[in-house]
Image (cartoon, rainbow over the protein chains, first blue to last red):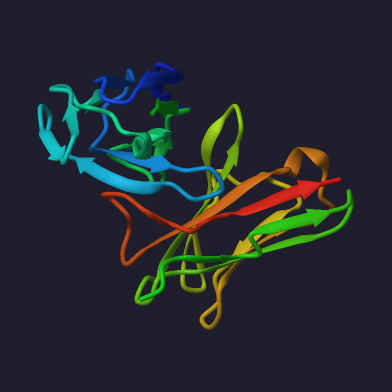
Length: 111
Length: 114
């Protein structure tokens, strides 16, 4: 089993604050994805990172893949209520057909 | 251009009944993945199918669960003789080839066993 641990598990912040969510593993992944899931819906893919050390930006969201391809972070600048949701990381191992999902970080942004 | 369509969105079954969950992949996608989400456990892989073939069912319970993806029609996840522990959200994802860079998920089927 290739475990992905996310921290924090829950996060409640005021609108306008910055935050970082972490996704850590002892396993190496060929790629890592971040998803956002809203209540009653399926996860929606935000980004995929492939290269160790890679940084991708999506508006106010910055994603980084660790140099060793074992961990990743998601940083949100000036959080807005629309950012509220469950953030999931998922890793694709070098072999095999499944992605391994973290247990998620539940983010609430208070107006 | 419809996304991944799952139905029903909500399904209630009594213990011992059968549950059938359907997934129509995005147009042009021939690879389908099923995942189960439990509140404290996150998303867990169940099965990976291509048209008419099961590629990887390593995440499927050995008994009562089966999946198919026929040449025509949606993929079906079938749970026989449901028990309360089967209550969960079941998600289907599709891709045009083996998904290396992420999935497009459907909205899920929430199964409740009473």
